[in-house]
Length: 255
Image (cartoon, rainbow, N blue to C red):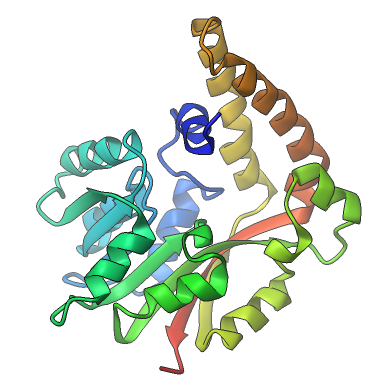
């Protein structure tokens, strides 16, 4: 089963598609010192909750790019619901491709904030994604990078249990090392906690359980049933204890 399709089902009831609560999402906007008229580009923007809420609360303008044919219409509907559709737009497409095409234009726009929240796979990891993002951020602008990190005492069985190679992420201080190696200065951060992980992951269990009840004959049902059973066990045993998650607020120090 396609991973994107799995997320579209599991996160059908979510507005924020990562382990942030609403309070943490708005706190992130506060620590970024957002001001009316600033422009943000959000890569892998999901249902657009960050851009829409920040446009409503802080007066920014924004553009989001996402690959999901389900999430992008939801994002546009959310912008209309909050009355910010005149300032926030969304494009369906591969974020890395759209960004590369944008940066290749001689008069391409520059953004005050460029964000990639929990999707550094678009550039093959943190370093590659930063290389893409910095091409369209204005001098002195911010890069927001949402990234998991390993707890310092993570045992080897956690990597296996979560089916995530150890080298994909690093510890919290190791994440700082990767950020600095990419030519960035870490100036702020907002981290998820065990409760916000629960609100993101555990609420999917109910959504998927309902979906399975309503779609027992779907060809996707066996994969979703396995996802539900595995997700519950790995979250309780490993994820909420050993896998951290946060958004790191950075400025470019090296061009």
